[in-house]
Structures are given as C-alpha cells and as structure tokens.
Figure 1: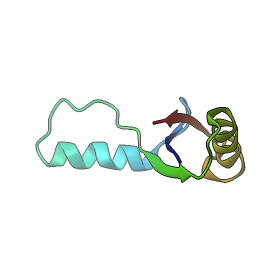
Figure 2: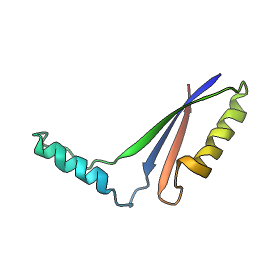
Figure 3: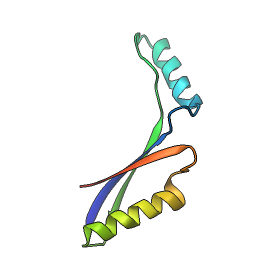
Figure 4: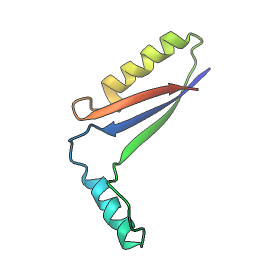
Length: 80
C-alpha cells in the first residue's frame, strides 16, 4: 500500500479570485499584515501498489488527466 499527497495550486500569474476573497476576509477578521493568499487543493490517495516508481507514474497520470488543469495549475506529488 502506497500513500501519497497531491497538492494542486494555480500557476503564478493566474488570477485567484477565491484567494483574494480569503485575503479580504482575513483582513476583515482583524488579521492585519496578511500578504497575498493563494488557494489550492489537496488530495490524499492510497494505492494498492508495491512499486514506488509505478505508483508515482500513476499518480502523475491521474493529475494530468483529472486532478489538475495543467494549463493553469501546477501539482506536486509526495509519496509517504
């Protein structure tokens, strides 16, 4: 069993209206000095795979095909 965490974030230069809304809300709650906020998503995935290299290749394929919009998003895969 292999466990992995996939983190997907918007690429630099891509507008992040949800991050901007969070930034504004934090300011309204009294958290002064908060810089730019970027919103992302995290996926925890368990694979019934023993080969780490195969699991990593499969996880990257999952990101390329479904979990990330690679036109506007970056992703990282961390196998734990």
